[in-house]
Image 1: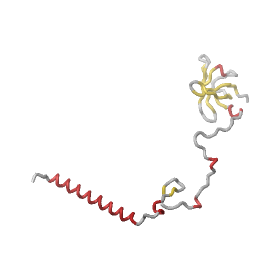
Image 2 (image 1 turned 135 degrees about the vertical axis):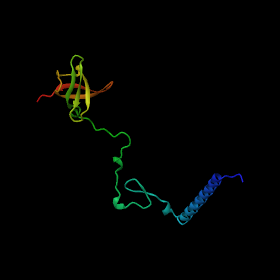
Image 3 (image 1 turned 90 degrees about the vertical axis):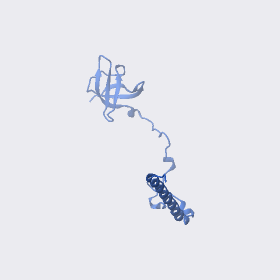
Image 4 (image 1 turned 45 degrees about the vertical axis):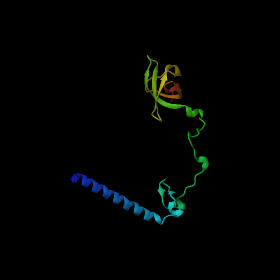
Length: 149
């Protein structure tokens, strides 16, 4: 008898697992035996997007207009000239270097500007109107002018 106790124990566990798997298969077969009709095979999607075995309540159904569905990039509305003009405060201005930054009052975004894009001379903390255009390194403020109160 060359088998050790450990080998016998492993073999016994292996046989036990095989029996358990066979029993589970038999249970599944018996459970599915009576459900061969089409209704038992259907799955429904509820209002939250989850799969369900029950149909959705017609009162919870929401109708969607096909024209409202946008796939990809949404259509942009036409920009009016007043939409292009933004208001901000000059947060940094280096006169010797010829550039500065403006912080938009609405979005709190910061935009770079160059002295060439100034209409009026500005200083730090001046309230200004400006337009935004895409530059080589990101968005830049152009046509910068002081807001007159």
